[in-house]
Structure formats: structure tokens, C-alpha cells
Length: 236
Image 1: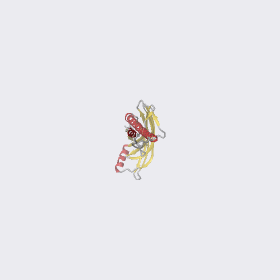
Image 2 (image 1 turned 180 degrees about the vertical axis):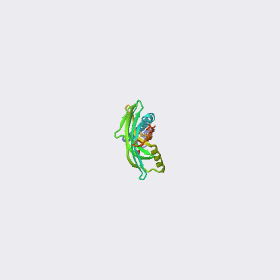
Image 3 (image 1 turned 90 degrees about the horizontal axis):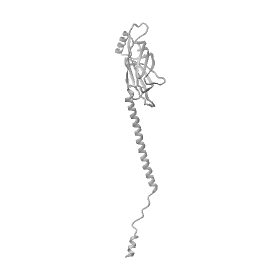
Image 4 (image 1 turned 45 degrees about the vertical axis):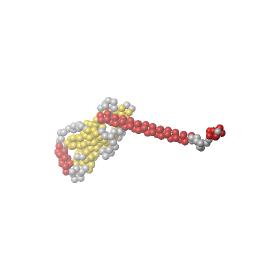
């Protein structure tokens, strides 16, 4: 019986368990670490993008609406003739423009200003008012001069021609100006991204050419600013 017991104690129950592959364990750990690192990097990137977007929105709603005031302070119209047989408008319009920064802590960077002049909804000229960008410091005003001069083909219908004849009789012409701007706002070392506002001014400009008897004087109009974020409109 003792011999049988010894045989049982030394009995073979199955094949030996092979040792684990250490290289496999290392590969598994490496893949797991890479996955965690990639996940952490993705979360960090999303968080940074969200913070930048939030700062952009806050700067827009807090700073941008009162960032500047554009006004046409003076306008002189010395030529405005329309020939009905060939639909040619001849014109010369000189403008004085002011850009006021009313804020105490903010600098406004004007990277581009484009202006277009329209009559009865028809654009007859456009000008780039900023060859180089400039900035307007807090509580400061920058002045610009602009001249629209030349001739342009515009197609006025019967109603438009009737309005032109009325303006001609009165010696005062209704001219619309549209300004498309590209600006940035700075507070200290922080400068926002680019904003693309639009400004529209409705002018009533008396003709001051020789022989004109109109005694009307130009009155500074109230311009309306539309604060937009989007692609700069090159068709201004």
C-alpha cells in the first residue's frame, strides 16, 4: 500500500504549463500605454479648441459691438451727370471719414477697409481705403479721405431715372456708401482673430458744381454697423 501511495503522489496529471511570453506582455503594455496617451492627447486638443472658441465668442459679445464708430463727416459732390442715351454716369465725390475708438482699454487694428458708392441700388465705384493697415488706440480717432471719380455704365430703369430727375431738380443726390472692414481687437498682449463688420451710410449730398444754385448743406448721416463673423466679401 505504501508503494501505491508513493505512485499516486508522483502521478502525472497533464502537460506542464508553459511560461508566459514576456515579449507579449511588453507589447500589450506598450499598446495600452499608447492608447491612453492618444486618448489623453485628443482630450487635451478638444479642450484647447473649446477654450479658444469660448474666448473668441466672449471677445465678440463683450468687446466687439462697441469697438469703433465710423462716420462720414463731410462729403463734396462736384459732378454727377447721367446720360440716358448710353447709360453713363459721370461723377466726382470727395469724402472725409472718421474712425473713432471710444473704449478705454482696447486697441482696434484696421487691416482692410473697402468702400463702395451706390446710386438707386447700382454700384458705380469702389475704393480700397487702406493700402497698409493701421491701428486706433483707446479714446482716439483716425481720419481718412476718399475720392470716387470717373464714369461708369449703370442701367437705370424708368423709376430710377424719375428719381434722378427729382434729385437733379433739388440739387441733392441720395448716395449710399457701404464699407466692408477687416479688423482685430487688442487688449494688452491679447489680440483677437479677424472680424468682418459692414457699415452702411445713407448720404444726401448737394451738388456743388459751378452754376448750381442749391443752398443745401451736407449733414453728417448716421451710419449703421453690422457686426458679422465670416468670409470677407470681395464684391463690395
